[in-house]
Every structure is written in structure tokens, then in C-alpha cells.
Length: 239
Image: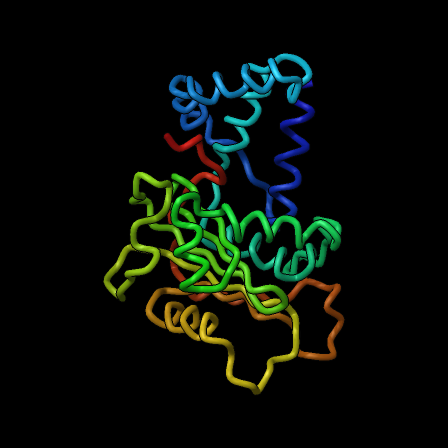
């Protein structure tokens, strides 16, 4: 049913974020009233047999799961879970099969930022995902997950300040490392660029247990940022 399927999706999101998440009902209502393009796409998919039944209900489920409240730390934890082979580095819960992670990262790398995907991948080398809520998360497999929320977005559904951030910016970011031993080698250029971006913003970090500890247990959390903005987990179809 509608409720069971939506609750299953929310449970998956919550596992990735490491805390219970909920739908922002006013945002969902607003999106549902203005998503005629998505309704048309759902009907077209139904006509070609890709949606088996009730295409408008499928569109409603998609719209509602796009209107989930998250903050920068939630997005960074989700990214770190992908970086850690589908295992949440904070809670220790396996949220996704390891075999499925490369497929998700491949889609993020090739289509995560829509028209800006190629430019982003050339500049950073990191699989990423953006949304019209102003959030962007990126994954460095085996190393860390990072997220930024800057509510002002471009017409291409990408946070407009993702590349130009300063200490005075209202942007909120979070970086969560995976539980691996630190390498003494100089990181790749893309990682150095991300590290530089982290130093220029207010960051919420989660410190994992030291090498050799039981990584199945939750790490110790040290939150350095005082606040974080809210956004929605997904977004509508871009025109």
C-alpha cells in the first residue's frame, strides 16, 4: 500500500542518516500542487509499461519521499555510508549491500548534478548528488562523505555557492570520515580541494574510533558546528 511503501523508503533514509527522518508536509503539499510535468512523465511510463498500475499514486509517492527534512550532518552521514561500503560509520548498521554501492556511485558520477555533472566531476573527481532544496553531498569511496547546504539554487537544481564559499557565507557543511587508518601519502588533487573547502567553512565532524578498535560499534561524535540549515532530501524534475 501507499503508506507501507512510503514508510519503507523513510526507514531506508533514516538508516543512512543515523536518525529518524520525517516528511515536511507543507513542502510535499506545495510540490504535489505544481508537479504536472512529473504526472505527465508517470502517465507516459505507464503507457509504455514501465509503471504497472496507478501511475498518479506512484508520482505521489515519489513526490512525498522527495520532501524529507534533512540537515548538513544528515547528508554527510548518508554520503559517508556510501563511502563506507553501505555501512553507516556512526551507527555501524549495514544499510545497503556492498555490491550495490558502485552502481549508485556510478549514477551519481554520471548524472548526479544534471547539466553540471561533467563540470563537477572534472573539478572534484567525486560522485555527488544535488537537489533543489540547496543540498549537495559528495562521496570519496573509502575515505569520507561531505555535504553542503546553501538554500539558494540555480535553475539547474544545484546550490549556487557550492564552489564559492567564504567564512562569511551562510553555507553549512559537514564532513564525516570513514573508519579507516589515515594515510601519510599526500591525497589526490580532488581531495585536497575538498579539504581546502572544509577549512573555509563551519564544519560538523564525526570522529571515528581509532585504528584497531571495533568499528562495528558507533563512533564518538564531536559536533563543532553550532547550527545547520534544513533542506529536502530529493527534488522535482528540472524543466
